[in-house]
Image (cartoon, rainbow, N blue to C red; front, side, top):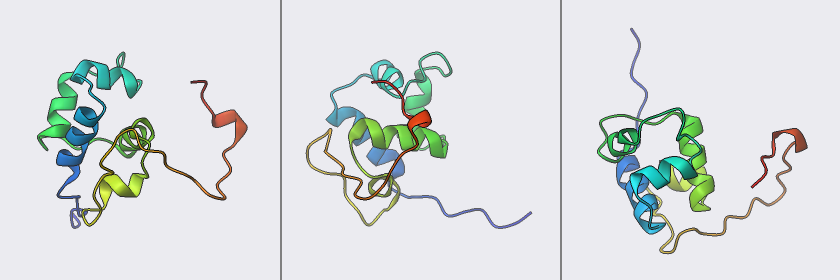
Length: 103
């Protein structure tokens, strides 16, 4: 079968820190991630206890909700900002207008 890909050791800890830093319940976090209709709130618990690893797109949603770079979440060498939501800046990155969601 091939080698398993390396997984961030601090991912679960950081996902929990994001939710708590935003002052959200698991159900509220699910809504903020825009997955309240596609997954059960217990999935958040599974992410936070490392029983299950979220998809890349779910981690991206966590980053956007927290206002941090994706790298801040998945790089074990980086810590999350002390205050959430943070204000991430994407210098020089242009998004396609069709992919933007109304907030």
